Length: 268
Image 1 (cartoon, rainbow, N blue to C red):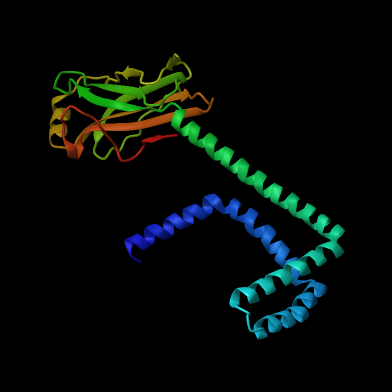
Image 2 (image 1 turned 135 degrees about the vertical axis):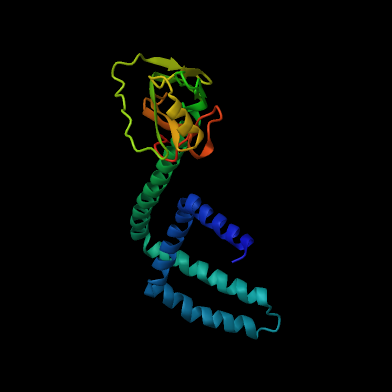
């Protein structure tokens, strides 16, 4: 299938998924009316017998034209439909009442789906998103204590409430073989972070960098790692968490910035 045809098919599927309820409101009543008329022996007899005579008469007249024939058929079917409605008045009202209930239920479901979709879209557009804006490594020298500078930013359009954060640093082989501890955050101070607001984290290695460790970093056999998280509540009162694992060293070397590791980075 050509790219244009694929795009057209995708667009058609998307349209049908979004507009299915409109087509249901059109097709369902139409199919109901056709089924009722087609299943009526009186209507079928009314259509078949006189219609053939009228059509034959219209076609044998010297002045008959195709529009005359079409009009004859249409007029006769309208007359038969009117007779059918007059005879089955009560049954038709009852049937259309049931159909109205079905159509109303379908419309209610479609409306509810549209409202839910609008709410989800508004939530995604307006909620807070607290993510890493910048991550750098400092003092990664022999005899110094390496320190990371992690900048977290609210990229959303509404505040992040009751925000708490935590991070720690360690050094290990690349890829890492150690499991770093994770803080539960119960004793952390809470604060609100407005749209565009930032706060900083400064996790330290906790020990002086030795010459052996420094050489392993330069040989790209080891890396400095920072793991952490930020937890908050968005404007819709939904708890959110952003988890991160960063490193400097390893295959990318020591160049002053920290890079997301291929595992442990997640947000909701």
